[in-house]
Structure formats: C-alpha cells, structure tokens
Amino acid sequence: MVTTFEQLYTPEILRLAAEIPDCPLVTDAAYRVRVSSPICGSDLILTLDFDGDGRVTRYGHKLMACAFGQASVSLFARSILGALPHEVTQAGDALALMLAGVNDGATAGDKALPDRQLRDGSTPHGPLPEGLWTGFEALRPVIAYGPRHGAVMLPFKAYRQALTSP
Image (cartoon, rainbow, N blue to C red):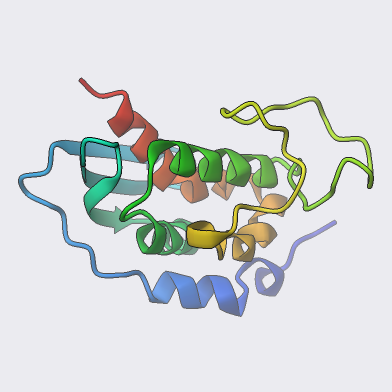
C-alpha cells in the first residue's frame, strides 16, 4: 500500500508539530543529552532534573526535526514534568511497539499477539497509555513510514540515555 502525503501528514500531526511547548534548555540541569535520528537528520538536546523519587522536576529541549519528531516532542513535553521513570519507559515501550505494528489496540481475545513484554513485564495488550501520556495515538500514520520511526522515538531515547548517564 502506498501512503500519500495527506495520509502521513495528518492535520493532527501538523498541529502538534506547530504547537511544541516552549521549554528552553535548563542551563544548570543535572542531565544534558543529545540524540539524533541518522536516517532523517532529526536532532534533539534534552535537559532534565529529577527529585529523590525519580520524578522529572525540570525539563528543557532544543529540537531540529521533521514534523513527526516535532509532534512526538510536543506530546512528550506536555507529559514529562512529574513523570516517574517507569511511566516514561512504559510509554516509550508502548509507542515503539505501536510503531512496530504490535500494539494496535488489540486484546489477547482479539488475535494472537507476538510474545513481547514491556519493561514492567506486562504484554502489549491494549492501546497506548492513558493519563499523562495521551495523544500519542495521533502518530499512528507513521507506522507505515519506517524511516521516521527514529524521529518519533527521539525524546524517549534521550530520556533513557539520561537515566543511564553517570
């Protein structure tokens, strides 16, 4: 199936890309991470601070990305403050599975799902996370365009890199 420009660049994706929250880099943040998507050239610098429980207390970004990377960072920026590590990694895992065509909202009773597990041990039966992480379903059209998956995953890649930084 050929995906047209209109099917890929939906009004919702373009709206999200245009409405990225203004989150300047935090100059004295404990964590500063830079990640790129080599296929499309998208680039993200992310700054983060955490409290003693691991909640994100301060966040900033500098982004040069395609519309898909912009839309993903837009959603990420709206959800990250106050988030705990397991919440962010679960959302990122669910998004990655959605992009891989695994997490399409099906339940175990609907069809056989691949034997994959999220970091918390649960299987990807169901839609993307709700609560803080709503909105990522707008990125479903990108499933059909693999070269942009890396741009969509940039904020989660940066977050995980920050967690593993010394």
